[in-house]
Image 1 (tube, rainbow, N blue to C red):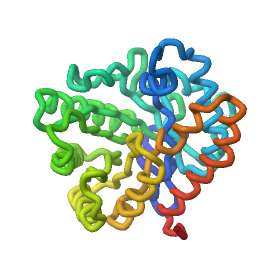
Image 2 (image 1 turned 180 degrees about the vertical axis):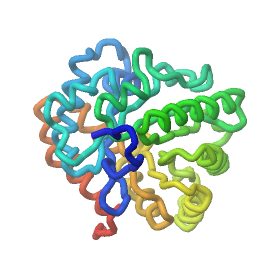
Image 3 (image 1 turned 45 degrees about the vertical axis):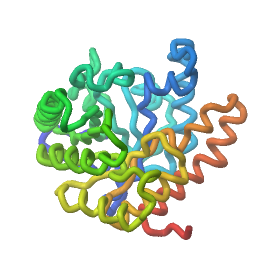
Length: 297
């Protein structure tokens, strides 16, 4: 895996033969601790997080085109465990943690001791950078500069980059569409290899799927590169419905995390493995079939 110096930078190792993405996201760290133990996130050990990630990848990655990992608990642990299937590349998260409680407090930084070069050397097929972003907040210009700098590093090293501008601090849920559009436009102008974006409509406030379709088509029209839909921690059924519409509008696929496996990882260990194998893997198959156009309902 990875991109050797002088080779063309492509996303082929994390997509299917048609350039479509079905990516399992398991790069969560602080948010995973808080999800597993809301009352005391620090009670969740590093060993427990790694073991959980290995379980999820073992069960679900055979249905994926790529897997999103991070360098604290899963690179190289998941790879060393031998659970990543042949032909399924992994994306390496670059960002440090600490943005959950106050996303607008400071610009995104690359994790200490980690780098674009380190991601490429680890065998990653792609790098990923999450940036909390709101175009009207003071941090906006700084976040755009961070993205541009990291993208320049990726171009120099020869590894593709996924940019994930994730909205926060909405004045009103109805402002979501404008904020997502503005983020998509600004980060698309930097020319990353792929954009990872939230659904551009608040589905609870706007149930009209024609409106959903028009909003997703606007993103496809403004972004010359492919874009993939992130799940954002909602329910699986809600995400499947959003993905169905997004694919009709020109979206290139999905990168899914807790909406896929969240309820399973909260179960006790024996039940968790059963749920991963019998429920979560089937969910991943269903999402992949939406992407390929073979979904029957």
